[in-house]
Length: 260
Image 1 (cartoon, one colour):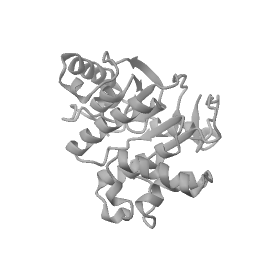
Image 2 (spheres, helix red, strand yellow; image 1 turned 30 degrees about the vertical axis):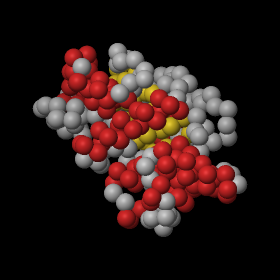
Image 3 (cartoon, one colour; image 1 turned 90 degrees about the vertical axis):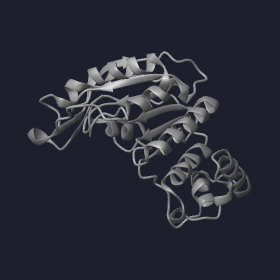
Image 4 (tube, helix red, strand yellow; image 1 turned 120 degrees about the vertical axis):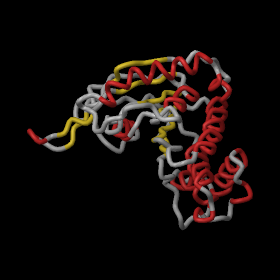
């Protein structure tokens, strides 16, 4: 599968060729340099873009198989927290009583019950992202697509939400494709980590973190975690700093991120 923007000689090759498969219930993290096509790939998976060549096949059993969560939350400022979480269910024409019950159930699981009647302007960034996560999970998607959802949060809150997401997805076993610049995040969350090249993005490596399920954030302190993080950074170093990279990045950040 490939994706280009524009036509003729001026066309920009943004992605591919990419050939990958995600198993049902698998949590796959995608890492790579900025501009390599990670978000483009996710938008193709969500049906928001079409590939220029090739195809993407979703083996789903429902009419609304995928839900997407963005870095900027994507929730509606004019709706209450409850109405935001219920939004996807309203689109699916789920009866109001059932929709309210499902929405409130997810609010409770994510610690938002007391804020059901509040508006997003009254919430912190972390709480807004919890609302976005509750809205996505309330529709019971077969596939969860997440585009750097924790990138704008501070380190402590990001770690907390990583652990919450880890717990939730291990319970629901929702198939998840998660884009991140953080190598630590990818290793904590993923069953598999796919490494992409500089633009046009191709998958150049695959690693399976050697941590069983159920997993907790305590894996961050293990020697295996540190070693695999260093290995991933070495795989990415040439892609980030090489001739095709958009900007140089002489060292890895404290959060284990791929420089933007």
